[in-house]
Length: 183
Image 1 (cartoon, rainbow, N blue to C red):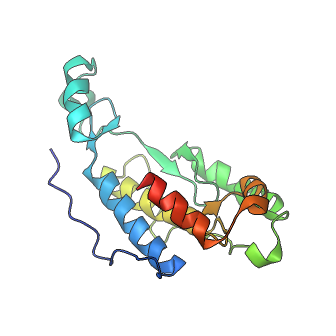
Image 2: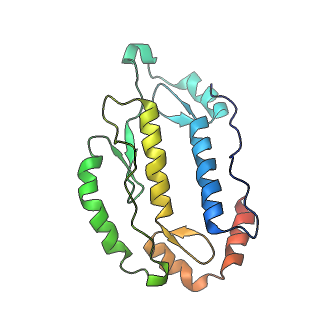
């Protein structure tokens, strides 16, 4: 079982905080949450309580019989945020940046985000550890999130949903309303 997660070290953003402060806090909180998940022998991720129920019914064999180091080897694309196998991601990433640029052409210049950067850590291989996969995925997911369109209300969007949201957005008060509704 994982240890009790600690709260983020970044200060909790307030009503007058900047978008960067919200992003810093949220990225750290999401990383802590993912690290607190329990990984079953079948490769699925759970919070501790649902894991106990799942484990009673899971039919997967223990890792010793499946080989040391069994885990789900999926990688997050830093451009689109989707998951791919370690063998498929390099193939996917040849076309994804160009596809992304084409999709983002509809975004007004005022809201145009920067192009995402690949993770600074090396892309894991079949021989890489679960920690290496997690480190890569955390950075790729953060790079993707930080390169989405950010509305005046502070919410992040892909281009099409952003254009649907924009005419109805009331600025920061929309973010405050959404924040109180879900938190």
